[in-house]
Image (tube, rainbow, N blue to C red):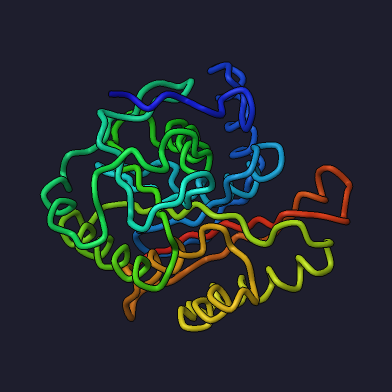
Length: 272
């Protein structure tokens, strides 16, 4: 059972050649981040590549030249509602660049983890997970296996369940790379978006998980994959953890409409 591409030709080019060219152009235009230590996590946006691809590339470029046996990608669920963490049970995910095999290294852990289960829920037409995969294929090649995770209800309970699972998975595979897929505020004017998103980004820069939780649950700030970001930061936190936020853009900078924008940031988490 292979999960087929559902947004190729929409969110990103359906042609392998055009897709590779676009991603390499984004990476070529991205700054080299001064990331110290061993990279363990990324935050990346998931809009159409013309809107958020350059911002995503800022984080993905930090993976150049590195190798990972397993990569876990966390996505929110935009279409389906379910009250658990859904892990794809099939053999892999397909993009125009090929099939990414699902890792089986964590099957026993998944089966024993509270709140996590093998399920197709949330995976069928979800773009937020899929759009991360071509970046990984271009930057890392085909030497890794994928664990596709879609988070249903992003309440406190499920965030804790996911954080516990991620920490256990990281303990099992210390080299595991974990990616949280999220955009920021949606459909405010650009001034409001910059204010809201700036608050979220400042809390991320300080690795202030408590403030992020307060912003997320009070809806003071918006992040459609905020639960995944919080769970990721909780799971990777230690006295040696550092986060590097790459910057900020919004959709109005591309389509020249500042009346209703979506915000984007990306980040790299490392252990020094």
